[in-house]
Length: 169
Image (cartoon, rainbow, N blue to C red):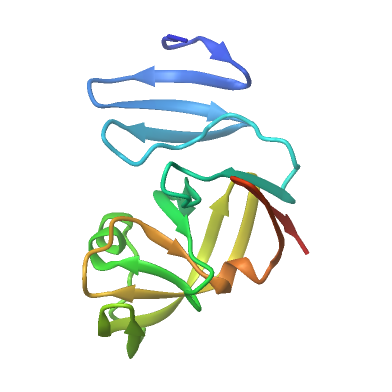
């Protein structure tokens, strides 16, 4: 559905529209959505901050969007990752200060990689916000953020066919 400045649809009010961005208001909070950024769901979801429902993509991966420290990111659920893993390019784009974090070497599917261990102020997926989440920023680029066990262990996870439900413990 097309909407313009001043219009409201399903609880999302369009405040302003520019050439490459739009400012919207959701439940009293303003967000700027920029053209070309990872897709983001700005409408409400069921669960009131406790339940996230994901559907697998054509390759069987659970991919969606959320925010880290208020910045949009696209993530993939990765039960094999010990922590949230962020490529250096995404970390730079999101303004994450990682170089002051602890330098680490980690084993990956492609061998040993260098990175920095840090704690994220906020990870927001669906209607759920988590604070103080362990993460690693890797030197090599990644197609998206890997949502690892530093997030997943805070949920009860169930899967049925191509659907995964995460319920906050």
